[in-house]
Length: 402
Ligand SMILES: [Zn+2]
Image (cartoon, rainbow, N blue to C red):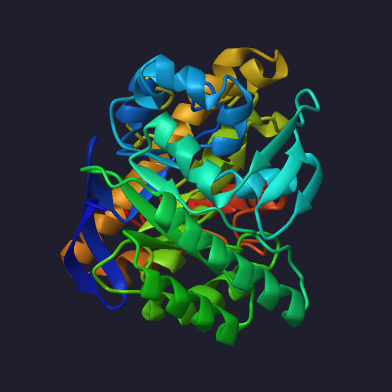
């Protein structure tokens, strides 16, 4: 395993680092846009890079079903296939099998399931999950694990976690070491601190290139997400990257970075971009609302994205959404990804300068809301209702976050 991680600075528990892979460097803390089906929806690879992303995430489950890992390998691997020459992290497929596939059966061997696309039968094991990610050419592969639902009783969580740890061992044994390619493990154990500790200890004994905290952002709420993260992160080695899977909203990212997390992924900025929601320094904004129909202002006059710097007004975005024009998804996704990447860049600079707490305070002062469900986006539109007040306040001179 030869993915390299360098811890460049710390500020409290927040960490500034760099992760070196076969396809280049990832500056951390980093947010990975989700490229589910070998594309970040509505974006060209150049637009994703322009937003500032060093790395994106691909979904093994979707790619193994369509177009198939062997086909992608024959066509030169995932990087060449989707024309993205920067690092790629792939999940193991386990999470989507649990959430999308039908007639799934979990056993000690792995998961037998039927495709949600055509009902075809498939068998995902620790060995095949690693092999598929190898065929794709992922810079960072993830171990196969079971993401236990929330809530779950302790006995079920303990048994599931123990099996995931046995799977992790088999994934490690199956992983083929290559320069610049690494395998990350996933700490499970639901919301039970002792199970999380057992899980972390089991994984450290095996040894991985990085450690993810899984099984969160599935409806437990931000307070619990933060509590589990705060208890788990210190159990992980300081010299390896830490990845909080499936998180989240901007305030989730800031809070988790404060608790020692280096990597994130979430569909939120891209999915929101396709449903009319913009994330800004002042909080979320629902462009579908009629109140924007005559608003000549950009989403954020200081934003460098194609939507804002391109001079597109909120009124125009509102019109595009009402007319169901695909340019709405393109512009809003580009804006959201740019906002997320600039937020991460701001945090990296703040940690390096030893002023992360000041950054966090300024972020909160800008009116970012604390979400009830980290990683989910169901309550995002509610938060948008409060947004205009906050924005007006910010225009009266709260100042810039950066
Ligand atoms: Zn913008």
